[in-house]
Length: 142
Image (cartoon, rainbow, N blue to C red; front, side, top):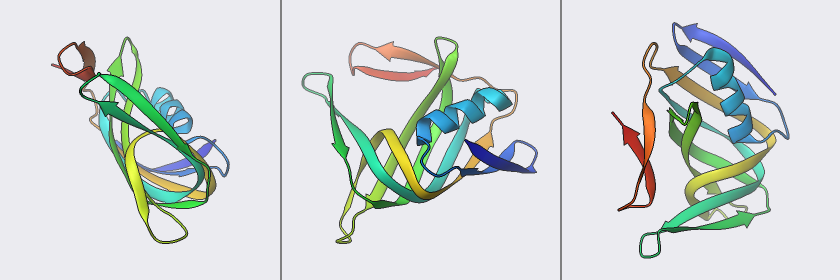
């Protein structure tokens, strides 16, 4: 699913295997390394992605899937915990064949080529999440 190298204590470089789903592989890595808080960044190539948009008026998510080859020009996010499980909050910008970009909250993405991620663990820390009724979001719980 992935290969990795720890480049300094709590800092990792990951290479995801071709055709794996990004969130699934990253969550598996976080479970393996017991990362309970941290940040992630990266780039790569994908052939399918589902973006999620929260409509603040209805507090309901609208998902849209794009099934085309795209370059991840930026993937950024954070790692926390919700209900005892890894919780990833990822955003991505992806470039299309015509050089236009789409982006937003990343729900899923399938690698088609390569995906290189950089993960920094806030070693020893745990940051939780709680559902906020007002916004409809899972916000940090301190």
